[in-house]
Amino acid sequence: MKIALIVQRYGTEILGGSEYHCRLVAERLSVRHDVEVLTTCARDYVTWANEYPEGTDRVRGVTVRRFANARTRDIESFNAYSDWIFSHPHSKEDEEEWLQQQGPWCPALIEHLEQRHASYDTLVFFTYLYAPTVLGLRVDPARSVLVPTAHDEPAIRLDLYRDVFRLPRAVAFNTGVERAFLRARFDFEAGAEEIAGCGVDLPPFPTDSDESGDAPAAAGDDRLRAPLSAGAAFRRRHRLMPPFALFGGRIDRGKGCEELIEYFGAYAAARGDAMLALMGVKLMPIPPEPYIRFAGMLPEAERLEALEAATVVVVPSPYESLSLLALEAFACGTPVLANGRSDVLTDHCQRSNAGLYYADQEEFVECLRLLVDNAEVRRAMGRNGRAYVRNHYSWDVVLGKYERLIAAVGDRTTARAPRSRSSGRRTPSRGRGGSRRRR
Image (cartoon, rainbow, N blue to C red; front, side):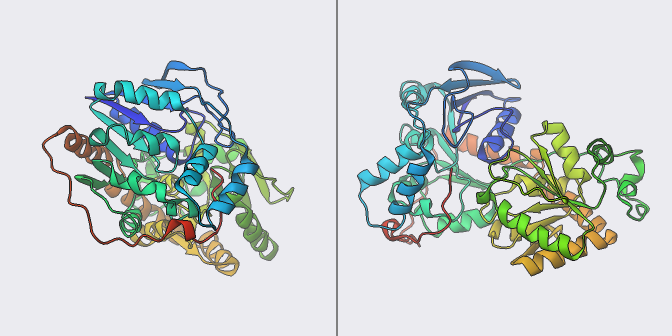
């Protein structure tokens, strides 16, 4: 089948969010299908400036067709407009203006869909939030699969998103938590749906414990077969002596990093026995504390080595629809310490028994102390996390769900589900304010 995946930006430099999710799925689907990614020329989600060349490219074996954005984003002006629209009555035209200001605004991509949609068997749209999905779903809903990657945020209460969830023939949710949240707020008419998530590769061996000063692995632990783990090599290369906590992703206030640094500072003041390594693109100032190490952007393979090397991986974001960071940490056999304000993260921790979560600074400090001090707890959580990923997020499991959705979309005789008459939607124009999403 010929499949188009539509996403706001795409590239090997983008190692998080729905863009990374889309790339992982595209690369795996391309083994069996003719896959084409339709995206913009933007590399940066703050301005959406055209940085990649327009036209067709090949990225890790996948055809990528890029279209130039018609405008860039003024983030300060957009944030001010968002503050107003989320807290005041407004019109349909106001929401359309908000969508344009948010970006990426790429009429050329939508024009391509309008002209060529029938040449694709399936259109897969990643992320409900942006204009390529909002406008693109209207072109050919019967061929469309939506991957919402949604969570509770002010934007989702805007009226313009009602059709986004009503239109597609199929929906691929990330988690059961996301599905319950969206079904309580929107009418769905999809004829097929799956809780698909995203696949995660299991490294051949869990974390090497001897390098971190832990007790030797128990009999039967597959670490006994690893002479020196990638994590141990990473620690030596970067002079990161354990114990250390790791965050990987956008180093941004919106991802909870400011709070993470504050909370870790309280831990360091009380204990002084651990470091915090921050891996990813820096979008906020990092205080020059001796216990903080900025690792910067790392290649994909080295990023996984870092997850294996860490004593604990911290996931501080209160807004998640899946959290590949948590799943990749589980796959590496590293326990997670997660923000308890995220229902998705707490659900992962509870179902996997591979992580702890915190509600405030005191709980953060106590949970981190427990994980740092207790090697046996870490080993047990590491085994649990790998089993959780193997059972629910292996690529065989995830791709099987995508194949069922693609088959359902390709079956033009499949009836759409009857429209639900009950909905928990709130009136978007009177929605609450809150932490605005700067994307």
